[in-house]
Image 1 (cartoon, helix red, strand yellow):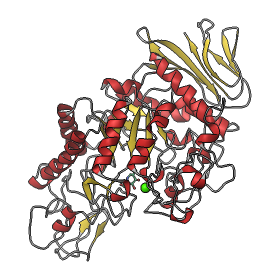
Image 2 (image 1 turned 60 degrees about the horizontal axis):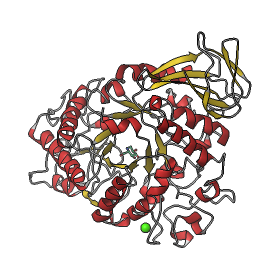
Image 3 (image 1 turned 90 degrees about the vertical axis):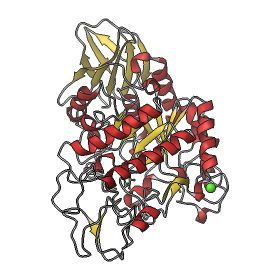
Image 4 (image 1 turned 120 degrees about the vertical axis):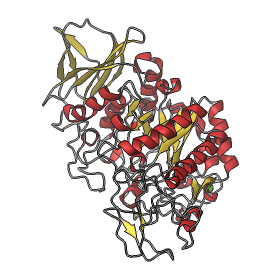
Length: 526
Ligand code: NOJ
Ligand code: CA
């Protein structure tokens, strides 16, 4: 484990919407640099930036046109290097977003690949061998290129799949993963990684990391082979650099060399029962509102989450971190599913479970999901990507541009939450997040890799209790009751412990059982 990860808390920034320093209505890299002290003040010591590279922005920058060039709207490569330096001065790290599975259809590699005359890039994307050919089960596009073939897509129409080869090969145009073309693709991605590592970045969040090899085995054995190669190159080159995968299968990703994987919202999985329960990750309309574990009046117990998360955590805890998020640029904001008091308990829980937590910008002040028309391929996700709300000034302090020139409108509500309104106000959500993260950093038992054990989780019961740490770190007991009624938590054989941290009313001990008042989180020395 890379040592700095044990104390890492990440903050995800959607660069378009964080802070605009030149008044053009769109967030920029100097804006992120300007707000580093704010991010640090939260207790976050690492950043993940969504893609900030040259792009036609048909998928908000996940359609990269030039991997080595910062998009003009965000600034210059020098601005990004200055951000790395400013972060490092503050003891912070910066992860860039690596999009290895596809490029923009406007990338020079793809344009060359689409030419009829064979060239160095002909085999860098996946082309069939005739202009009417189907994609063998994969989405494909025909009729757009002079080349006699159709090409495979990785996501939207604007995102042709780069060629890392095939596991099972059923067609003559499907290459093995060690073909010259597939290996050249790997080298090209490594070249991009090296470029930004040399510029000072601390690693990468990897987009659709599980998507590289097509017709892979169910356990993604071929894609894992590719990642073992690329993560080994990274570790040999810059041992302190880290990689976090968008994969949601730590038994695959962490074994393939990733330092971290995300637990993501996937139709009815354990995570979706924790915060939102939207019954699917593709729709802004909640179908089970009020039924997530952290909803006050829910009847859901923690086993819905644990049944999914715990086996993966146990199987991979020696390999890396399985990380929990408050949300991200692809999810509906957590504020849409949980009220503020519910979110306090959710954040306290997420930030004291193992792994490195990821806080999505604005969740710390309770930014709301906005119903908005789609922008740059966002669709329902657009509503979670609105400008950061700094103060009560014009455009809530995000930009000096005229309101109609903003990348997305700011929250129009008269009571839209802002940093300024909560900063220094005891009990505000912002100050609560700071308190939780201060506590986390002060307790070695809450380090990302410190041991974890369930103490109490029961069907049809609302309380959940767990232990962190060991003899080396010291031991903590954490307990949460998201319901409104007091809960007795049997913790047989434990002595009365001093609460070190409490949200809500102070819990009490009666006859060997901990009684947690409604809507309480507490951590005890043990
Ligand atoms: C996952 C990213 O998080 C999402 O925003 C993007 O649209 C797709 N991958 C395609 O790159
Ligand atoms: Ca700007």
